[in-house]
Length: 205
Image (cartoon, rainbow, N blue to C red; front, side):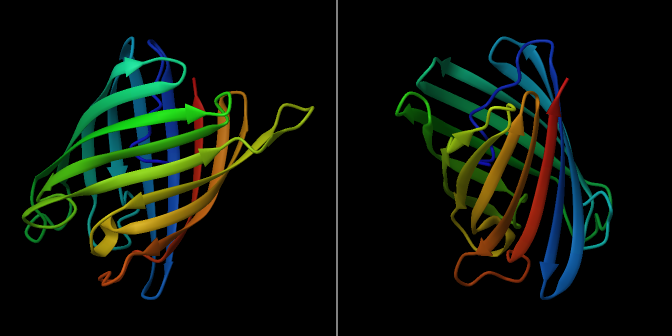
């Protein structure tokens, strides 16, 4: 949840995540793969594959980085950048770039985390220069005796089309593993594609 998340992969660790999206109307399936490596303390590099199943409109590879400028127990200030390179339908879709800056605050002994920030898109989410807000809420609801924990979350991004959405989800975690089912609700005036059910599965090696 809260993508781009305030979490930064620890130095020397590799985070791998698979995202499966299904849109009901118009019906299509999209599969994304995400890799992030902790290059330095509070600094990760990443490589994402968007629509790697190529069942929708385009396939894109996205190298990027994220840097937590300030990162302590209750507050994180972070910035990042992603470069979008289409590898299918490149006649229609162009090279693009997204930069972002955000902050996250924790409350109630770390059980509640609020995230807010902004993004700037150039030919990435949509053609042209775009800017908007991102936000999120995560709450650690309960941890069971066997180590599994549950936590609801909510993501938000302003805008129209697939980059404008509100997404409730449920984080289910144990150790280095997590799975998060949820639903992406399109903001007003969405241009098809932002009403999706999704499942994210991740593990840190």
